[in-house]
Image (cartoon, rainbow, N blue to C red; front, top):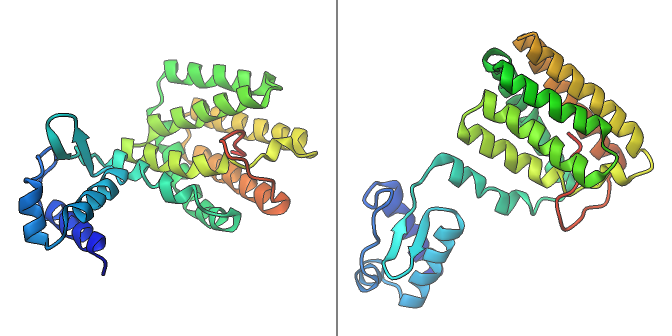
Length: 235
């Protein structure tokens, strides 16, 4: 085990055990280096690793602190690794996403307010009318994110955002089949909104599962090019 790994796992244990609690300032570097048996350079690199995971934060002029350790913040950092997945790895995650999206959709059907439904219907109209990929991508993201907010916890919302973020790097709607895919996606969105409007959790869950399964089939069949930036999301 390298000195950096030794420092990282030592700090991680301090946080996971509660010895260093959420919001607490780290002990002085000299004390930590002595306890962990590492140099200041190794310790600082370990702290940077924890910061990348959302578990530590530097405050200018004050020192380094354990973060608030909010589940949604830590889950959101999974994007650092999910963004590295090739298409085949992403397709494996769709099974998890189908389950989560179906659950969130069913919950949303039971919780949605008239105002929230009106917002979704407005975004659906914009999505259907849009011929601009950037605009379509923006409102499609808002549509799904709003449903996740209504039907899930902040942690669920963060996790689904991570799963969707990688999908948005694949330019499905730029393919020759793009218009056909969009028409089918619009139909799926209408089925979702109808189930939410009827407050039918079973129908909402079924519509979500069908929509995600369709997106998975598109990606698997077409294997579209990946871009460096998130663009259209097939679902």
